[in-house]
Length: 176
Length: 120
Image 1: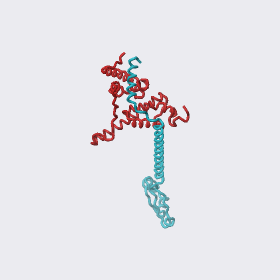
Image 2: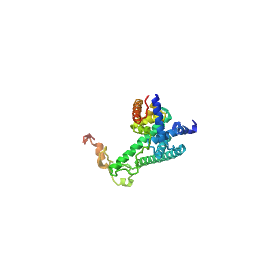
Image 3: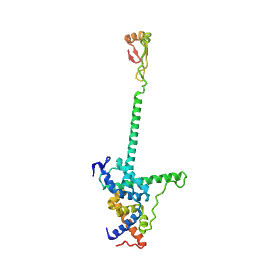
Image 4: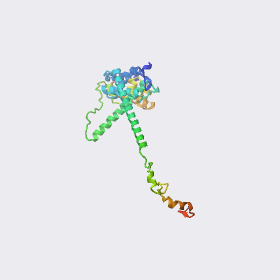
């Protein structure tokens, strides 16, 4: 880690370390924003601002990747909370469908696996994505999701069972 | 991780990779924008804290420079010499009294009578 690289308000984070995981962070942000590229870019940018200003402070209790993923996850949650409350406000004000506020759109995927993953409950989907696709342990994934490791493990097992069942219906075999 | 887990993992990974065919935004672009926005936010915060400090100083100055109710009053000495009467300044602790020094002082000095419950 070069000294000049280190962030002023986050002494354990360097620009180069962030650059190294940028692709993975962007992928996670994409998944958080319903695969909307500009929304994902905005989300990642906001996460970097949190790190630059020191609002999100990395204290090495986890890996940098786990930490940055958690920041993205929390920002995405608060962002959707804001959007949902604005939608509710507009609906109660009699505007009907809110104009200009788009709900995240799931990408059209023909693959049965993808449809099966998308059909999972949110937390099961998240842990499957983090463990299977983002190379995280169940412990790290649980940390990102803000749940205990035990709860994460339960979601992971249920997700695997649900996926196997769904995919077996489509003729895909994932049993031992 | 069992074999079936590995196969499931590969299948899900492949499906997700297909979903993520959108190219990632350039790190340098995102970083530069974040640095710029963080700079703006810092300036705004400094401006706000500066304004708050200035407002606090203004309030303190206003409070300390407001004239109190009981100010010193200067009386022209000729005005005082024109009369033998004197009026004691009155407030909640000191009851208002008025007396004439030629009339009252001898009585005050010589009297052995009780005045208002007190032996004068």
